[in-house]
Image 1: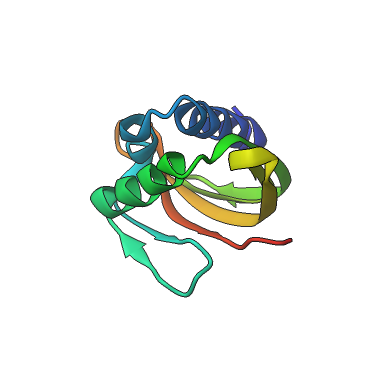
Image 2: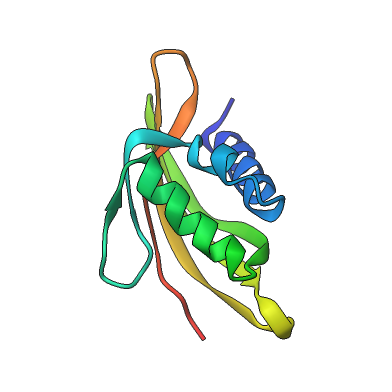
Length: 122
């Protein structure tokens, strides 16, 4: 399977988990020691902190999340993507930006996000 196909599958799983409010499934897409920086100058580490962050997003009405790959690459067991993201919020609000993530393949062949950073553009 090529890199773009792997990332498209990962993105589909990510969007499905968030949009269906399945935050446990969403957190499981990250490695145990993953880091996330949500564009506000902070860095979160580990699945429990990542789960809490995305749970707060869903509780505040974030839904209909999409990803559009701009660039992807990598080799062997480490791949990356730069993508446009878009989501809806409450009362017809809409927002988006650019995201960058690094995925690593574990010894069992599964791909997990190890690092995820994004910004928000108005």
